[in-house]
Amino acid sequence: MDTISRVVDWHEPPVAVPWSISVQKIDLPVEVIDECRLRDAEGGTTDESFAVYCCDKPATVPVHPAGPYLSNTLTMMVEGQEGLEPRSLRPCHRLDRCTSGLTICATSPSVARLMQRSMEG
Image (cartoon, rainbow, N blue to C red):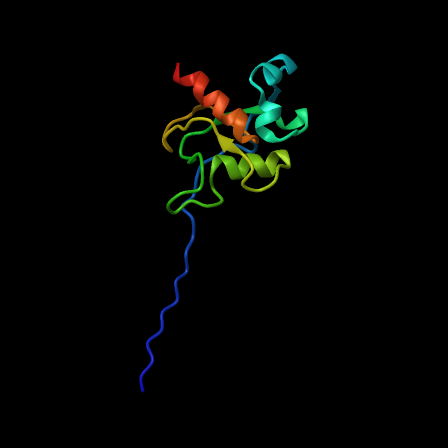
């Protein structure tokens, strides 16, 4: 009996990035945490998780893993650079892969939702 086999050698498309991505962590004020009841939504999480990460997204870099991109994404690169757990950074909005600009991310789902609602109007 003949056997047909195939080997797939897959590589992510390259992206052009600077040596490090400019990231600023901004802790939410306690007043905002209490007013929006973020502690209740997170089940008593520490104040450290109530922060947003403002990232200077370079062009050619997708925001999150999708399609042919897994590791060459903004969230994965910032998590590695900032020492965050893999897949812990949640984008609050998105920019297209070919667009550069400020991207706001959060590690807390409730903070991400708060930021999304704030941007919607």
